[in-house]
Image (cartoon, rainbow, N blue to C red; front, side):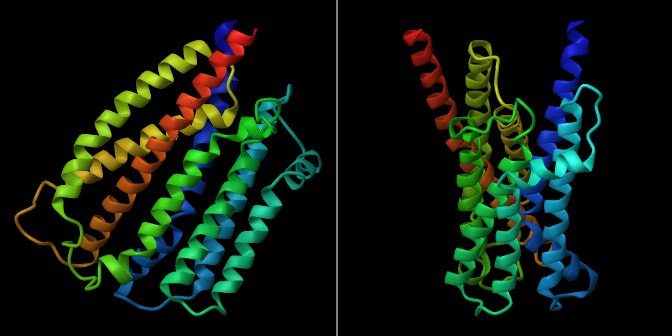
Length: 294
């Protein structure tokens, strides 16, 4: 009986993690992925910005589809018609996030491209990502439509803002030459290899304690720490891969993108993890205060 009752929750959690991955990773690095695809196909050729817009639109629509699937899983029959789902989707922040994404892409077609504009647009894209993600994970009774029950978005928002700034600074400031993978010092990756395991251990201890003391958590609160742990593991492997051969400099598209991916993933994962630790500590403190008041 217990296994039957927990199976839908586990299934919904998996879909929620996939939705978070789509928005936090795929949506954030869409520009770089398209750029890499074009560079790998035929060198550094220019491509239409509307291709990025189409990919972003597909990601946002896929996130809405995942929300539909999660909402259906919450129903007794396991199904939900689109006539019932569409009002739920449109009454949340999803339309605002999607509309902001469209407006930003249109603005990019007319605004001059420089570092300041790029940073501002990147920050606004992060806000759009957060609005869509909050709407997607507001599912059934476990979504939590109160502001205090949406606080799980803060680590993802702050961490993505940090990496958006780092990504915007990459080519105009950090990687001026743009040909060889020698922009980031190996000391940075060496430090990341040591710091990330400590963050993983600390997160594991805090999550274990918090789950024992507060078993009833919203969908976003359950999925966000899991995504953080996964991103930390990937960042650890990417950072370690940059230390395998450190006595020679590799050049070319693959080497440059490898260094870029290792750098931005390490920055994003550690930033999200640090804010997640603060969020978990504050959540734990609030939970203890509620017990004392009771």
